[in-house]
Image 1 (cartoon, rainbow, N blue to C red):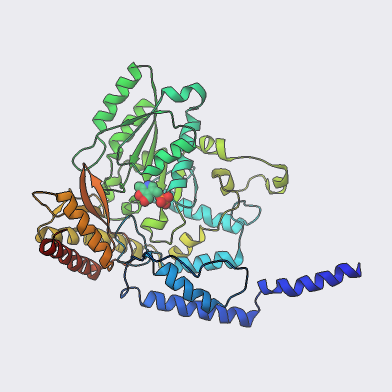
Image 2 (image 1 turned 180 degrees about the vertical axis):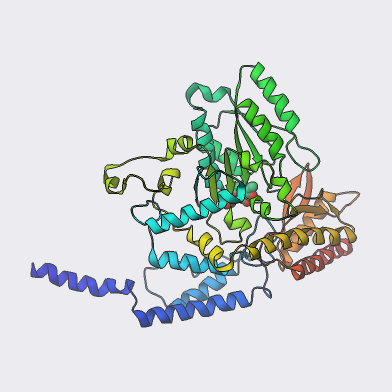
Length: 480
Ligand SMILES: Cc1ncc(COP(=O)(O)O)c(C=O)c1O
């Protein structure tokens, strides 16, 4: 026994390093705060994209203890000064968001308290906060209170959860898979195709419905295709619309699609991961008419609410369908199965243990209220108009008037237009003050702008124009 007690004393001394005392915690926080303050204060002066081909070093785990100052020095060099700076307002490529500070405070609080937000039994308060966020989302999108939701890590997992519910509701399994038909547009985010494979629907028939001039799915063609498929004894069961496509920000005609889905008994899923929160803006609200009729909906707070990466949301109306795959019981969980509790997040998602990510949505809403979020979204729409107007003034061609805040442009050339614009993209990346990304639309290489970071302001667009016009001049003067 004494031997055991001695051993425990030894181990306690060594492991106590994991519990810094109050003084040490203060010191660590001061060091971290000094770093994050400098990071934020410098954000408007620094680059948004860093090209650096040198091998990464200084991040190795060598099993020894290092000071936070030393670690942050390496972190600063190898992490924040490489690739894209997603916190910068100059990030107008892919789909940005920015990462508001109060959400980082929420993460800190969630991590220090480490509330277990998977099961109500473990943390009724944390689960109540998740439900509060979901109920707020239901109100925003006109979903009934009885619908069920979850806050997974992002849009990809949120889509996966929704599509699983669609599959289970229509019992698409076994030999039924090969005759089942899904309708979507070529512009749907690729996480949808990924999810279909993951959930065993890789062999379903996918019908890509053609698009109008604004890259929106043509509802009348959807109806025609369903008729053809039914007459061939196929089984249409799901239509997927986007409320804000990744490439061009297009919102599909949701109400028309809802009419068809309803009359044809199809599950109607809407991926609003990028665009959903523009429902809050007076200018764009009308585009979302019909979203409330969806069977399932995905929206990403880590995009349109400007939160740091790591939180998406899914809402599903059909309780039975969403619980079918995700609700499970296990003996070692028996204490947690109480009657009459709010739904456990673990019953609605592949995750059991989860980060208390509802807090990073809830706390900023508590601290700021909703108005600054709406103003910021309105600002992104106006900035998109401003950017396009300035580009057109400089001789660029721009894509169709966007529904939301993603658009694209290219510099017209009689010959080698794609090569010219590819070179422009390279020069813009080399410069790095503002980060844009590219895509290919109908075989044309175009440069995309996705204005969604809360830090993107008029001066960001002015800098982007300076860069872009400078790059055109360089290619004109020196060739590719
Ligand atoms: C429309 C749309 N859906 C889904 C996703 C995937 O979301 P996530 O990257 O959060 O997994 C994205 C990402 O940009 C998107 O734009």
